[in-house]
Each structure stands twice: as C-alpha cells, then as structure tokens.
Image 1 (cartoon, one colour):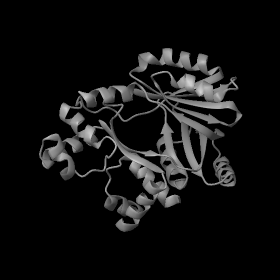
Image 2 (cartoon, one colour):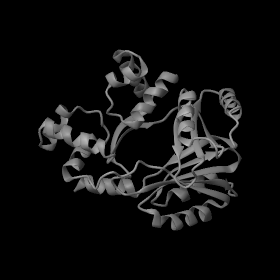
Image 3 (tube, helix red, strand yellow):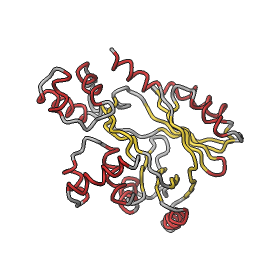
Length: 294
C-alpha cells in the first residue's frame, strides 16, 4: 500500500459510491489504474466491504472521543469491559497506557453518564472529552421507508449500480437515483468502507496557537501531510485542537513525521502510536438492524 492507495481509500471512506472516473480525475490516474488499485486492496484484505448506513445526522446523534492514561494493566479485558457499553464503537490502545475511547451518543444528555462510565471502568488517571464536529443539519428531511429499503440492499455492497438494485426495491432506476442523491445532499447516509490498513498508526494531538486561522491551518495540514493522513478531526468543544491519525510503514517514518510536525511551531504537540484496537457494535448498529428487518 502506497500514498496513492491511501488517497483512494480516503475518498472511498468519505463516499464509497464515488465513481472510479471521479477518483481518477481527482488523483490524475487512469480509471483502469484506480480499478486495479482498489481490487488489490480488496484482495489484500485492506478493504473489507463497501458499506451503507444512516448517518449520525440522520439519527440526531453525536460522536465523542475520550482519551487519557489508564491505571489498569489488563488492557485487553479493560477494552472488552468498556466495549460492553452500547455507545462504545472503538477502543485504541497506545504506548504508555494511553487509551482512546470513541463513542456514539443519541444526544448530548447522555454525555455525563457515558463519560462517568468510561472514567470509572477505564480507571483513567486524567481524561479529556472531545465532541466531534459534524456538518450542520440544514434540513428537517429524514430517511423514508424507501431509503431504508435502498440501504438494506446496499448494506455491505454499497457500490452496486442503481440499475442493478432498483427492481429489487420495487422502484424505477430514476426514483432510486433521486433518493440516493437526496440522502447524500442532506448528509443522511454514510457510504463508506470497512478499512483495515496494515500499517503503523499514530495519533497526533495538534494544539494551534490562538492567533492562527483554524480553517486555513486545517486545510494546510491536510494538504501538506496528505500522504500519511488517514483522518483529520475537529472538535466543537476544543476549538484549537486538531487530531491527526496518520499511517506510516515504519517507526522511523513515524518519527520523521513527528519531527516535521515539531518544526511547525504549534502551541503543543503530542504523539502516541497505537499497538492495538477493538471495534464494537453500538446502539446505532442495533437500530439499523431493526429498521432493516421491519
């Protein structure tokens, strides 16, 4: 897996229904080259599936990240205990007993209960809670029963063509295409991939100086370090923090990336390398499954 593969994967993580032609134009590669690279990532087990799910915006939910150092020594058991909560979807374990807990909440009123649970069960010495910044909901539009029928047939094969599945849901290709366009327009659906990069994963906490333009710095970092960035996250309750999840092939490459970021002159910079991670089902998955079975 090289830098071009990562760029392709990031575009598919954002919207896996993006056509290979659109990706080829974005990355200045041929359509055939994009197809071969995607197929190679599938064959190597890097792309597990192409998924379709209702978005957090459609469910009126929020995403949070809680991180800190744990006093616990049994981190695998600890992770499973934290994963028993219906809101926990990912636990990342990093060197120095650093632990990252990602969760989905139905609304902000659940934050106190969940953060109390995480701190108690996680035996965190200190912790920071971050509320992920999501696109604004610009409409009262909701997912219809037809939308759920479409998501059901696209569930783990979200790149199916409209002409391939329209008859299956009992509508014309034109109607199915219109519903997909509307879901995308209003951020009601996540068309993405289950992605398992077999590379070293680092988490960089970047605290910007108050006089910096946050939006410009975010865009600049995304462009400058694009060959390594998997995710670049913003948080609504910590306005000067950017969380960079980066992939590297070796420890030395990770160290070089750290050194380059140190030269940027940020207010603060922390670097942690993950050595294990666990995914869990949440209330989101259960709700989605109930909708699909109706």
